[in-house]
Image (cartoon, rainbow, N blue to C red; front, side, top):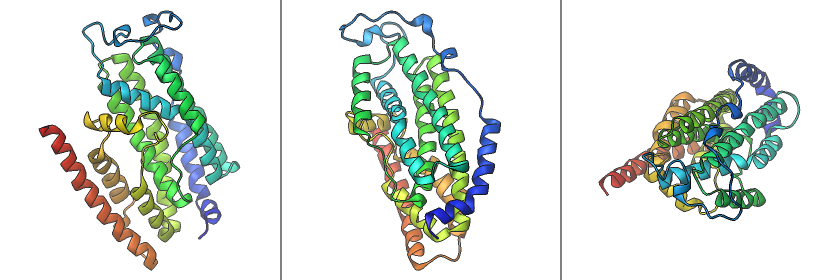
Length: 304
């Protein structure tokens, strides 16, 4: 089945999922969450130091790894124009898919607003480095690019859930109630976006199981968090993994096992082509291997 036919077949499900989303998504306002009373004017040209923030000079301490995670999380949200471009290209701008894409974009836009305002007010991280990073990220326009719609459905499901996990875990390590509440609020939005894509993928598997399993295998094999292009991303990713915000074991235990294996019930899918059967076998082996490698890496970090 080609991609346009698949989209048409699952369009009624997409409409139901959009209506479900609009029924449960709660309106919220970034300005009501940001602690503006903690802010002060910036002196032009003054170099930021950790002691400038609420988290460096007193009893509350924010670790460098958490600052790095906030940097990555915000710059990821800043790259929204390119995610919209790709989603619009994959799903189209008309009908329910266009309505979903535009609503998703509007909701995602609040995330960069609230996180940036919070970081600016609290001076939690270097604002000059943050702005230079934003310029580099958006100028580059680099985002993960699924090969086709089948891979994209699986990737978007995993990526939205991964982002929810990263936001919430970052918030828990900030040692600031306001910051944690902001990251939890953003994480709640990401969770609703994840549920839309997860359940749309479920419908797609029922309609076109062979192409979907081939796409899922490719998405798992090539999965990368949407931070490519961010300055110093590889080092920051290692730090984020080291403190347990998001690592390979979390990816296995909280995404691959519960979503790919259990929710999508890939073991029970029948009527596959030979290519899809091989892809499913390779997928299961890869997930098992990721679990073992992730557990070893986590154990090595604890014992180090």
